Image: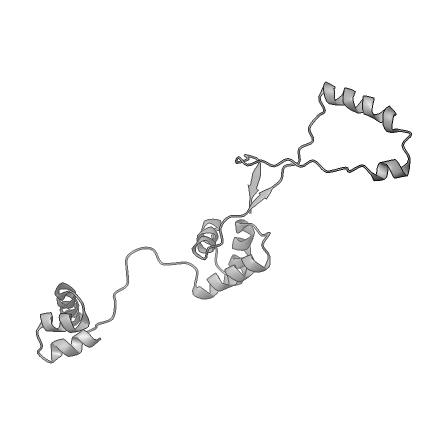
Length: 160
C-alpha cells in the first residue's frame, strides 16, 4: 500500500494522509496495524460467510433466466445437486434479489361465476329471438370475451 511507503520514508502521518486524500486517523490506524502484523492487507470482516460461491451464483442466475417458471425451492434443489452441498430456498431467494430478479407471481385463479336469476331470464329471452337469424345477420354481430381484472392484491396466488 502507498501509505506504508510514505510512513517508511519518515514522512509525517498527516502529510501522508493529505497526499492520499484520507483522514489522518485512518492512516494512523493502518500504520498501527502494519507495525503489529507486518501486513497491510485487509482483515476479514465480521458476519457469516456466504455458502454460495460466485460460480454458484452465476449458475443460479443462468437457471433462473433460462427457465423462468422454476420456483425458488426447485432452483435450490438444482443448485444443491450441482454444488454437492445443501443450499436453502431462502439463500436462493436472497441471491436472486441481489441480482434484481424479484419474486414472480403466478396467478392460479379460475373463476366461473354463477349467473344471477336476472341474467338467466335475459339469456332465455334473447335466445328465441335470435334463433332464426341468417349467417349474414350474425356476421354483423361482435362477440367479446369477458375478462376479470383485479387491481387489488389477491390472496389466492402462488409464489414462483
